[in-house]
Image (cartoon, rainbow, N blue to C red; front, side, top):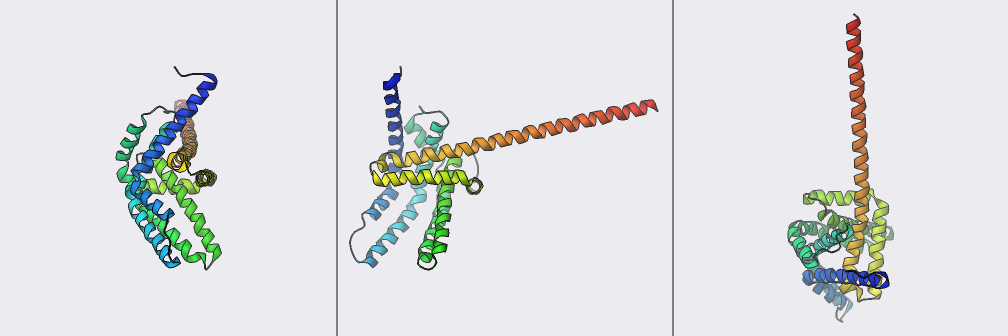
Length: 264
């Protein structure tokens, strides 16, 4: 029996800490090659500026190569667990749900990961190129980069929620990101805040950073989904009412027509 009162509150908090930590650790373990290169980038060695810059670029290339095959499937699995939590299934078996989702969504998350990795690489290269030439263009590329990252969060949310083809998921993720600018902005702010505090309190990175971002991102997406569902339901009811009114008018016209024929 679950304890109540103050002890019950501590118990529920400890449960959530455990859930978030377990999923975050699973996410990092299944993304281990990407994590290895990311760690290498953080502890880049000494040398001349040219050597260090070359080392950074080479590490980024390796990260881009392994990301679609490790980071993206692992992130999709993490979002699948976050979906369960947001929709009220907080007591799902963590390991079973994570690895089942990892297997089921591997192909689509890998294909989406390849496309997103290419787009992100293009954006980053353009930012580096134009940063020193035109500051305005560099800010525009930063804005596009943020939109692309938010659309990536929406892609993962839609991947674990809908049964669609990969191209449809990519297209709808971008459309939702652009079509719901305030939700997109709030997702970017929340994810940015989590990453900022994770750099200040580094213990958050291995235990909480990814799982918290996944939970908040899917929670925000779920609000968009519910609103779209409400709009679709209202449109369906309006169409039914219009069809009923049209049928009633046809019935009245038919009765009037029969009455006129009878009078003749």
